Structures are given as C-alpha cells and as structure tokens.
Amino acid sequence: MKSNEIDKIIADAVNESKRESKWHRPSKGNSTSILTARRVLNTLFMVGFILTIIIYFVFPENKILFFSFGFGSMILKIIEFYLRFMF
Image (cartoon, rainbow, N blue to C red; front, side, top):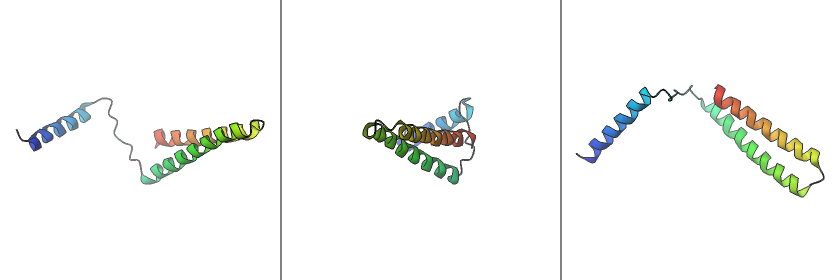
C-alpha cells in the first residue's frame, strides 16, 4: 500500500467514528463575533488575575482593592464561560 492510500483509510475511519460517536457534539455554529468576545474576555480575565496577585503582594493592607479586582476578574470569566456553553 502506498502512504496516500493509508492516509485516506485513516481519514475515512476518523470521519466514520465521529459520525457514530455518541460523545461527538456538532458545533453550534460559533460565529466569529462570539469567538472574538471570548478571546477578549479571556485576555481581560488573565490581566485582571495578574493584577490581583500583584495587588495582594504590593498592597497587603488594601483588601478592598484586592477583592474588587479578584471578583471583577471572576465575573469576566463567568461571562466567558456562559458564552462558551450557550452560543
């Protein structure tokens, strides 16, 4: 057998298993606007998380600022989580 024949057999087997798999869920049509919003929210979450850690060590007496950034970052992540599974 030639390598391109083997590749075709493997590709056909993978496609067949995806069609038959009960765990494979067809995509809900993630539009580019949803994906872009998720990327922006994830980036803001990561920046907020890093800022939260920096605030914790630089200003240990200012707990209100620490909790504000921490909870704000978590809210961004919850919104992203919602977008991921609902759209």
